[in-house]
Length: 249
Image (spheres, rainbow, N blue to C red):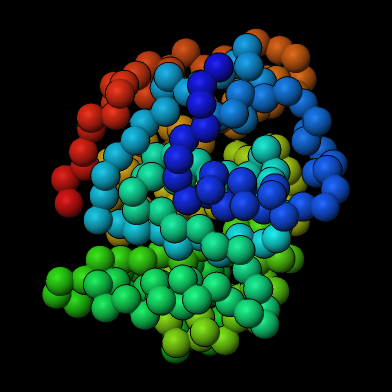
């Protein structure tokens, strides 16, 4: 069993737990889990976690209970890119000043990642185009599809940014929570698609492998069966531990 990695999503999770006035009782919340990967201890995957450095940066805006859910996949992005993932709780009326400061940071070009069918066509782009010297900041709204739509529609401070529409070739394989539509990907899958389409294929593949392993073992633990993940373990082992792999920027 491993220790909890110190990254933005885990820090947000600890903060959210500290302010809770009652136990978190969502499905799967009472199961004993490894604090590092949140899988059941006998299926711990911490030794296979890839950690990369990248110019690509993520800003996770998370619905209130999302950091507490063992099935949350936004955390997987921070696992793989711990130095370039930021995480904030969403508030309709009082957005976190640190979130607003990040969005205004001149070092970044923010993109709101969201389906093009939901936003004004003039805001929609299908590829990343960066001004000289800027890094991409991909804003992901982390929650259920209904919650993500609410965050998108009730956050006027996001209205000034271009909307990056991701159209993956494959439908979601995420089985831990059921989406309203098959084409609705989970947060980690969206991030992997964004990375690959924006010119960061190493990071995208590493995240996709990590998500696939987490999903496989999460479901195996839920149904008390052995995971079929030998190929994924081999792929992730190539990154090595401790994390020394650095993507080309």
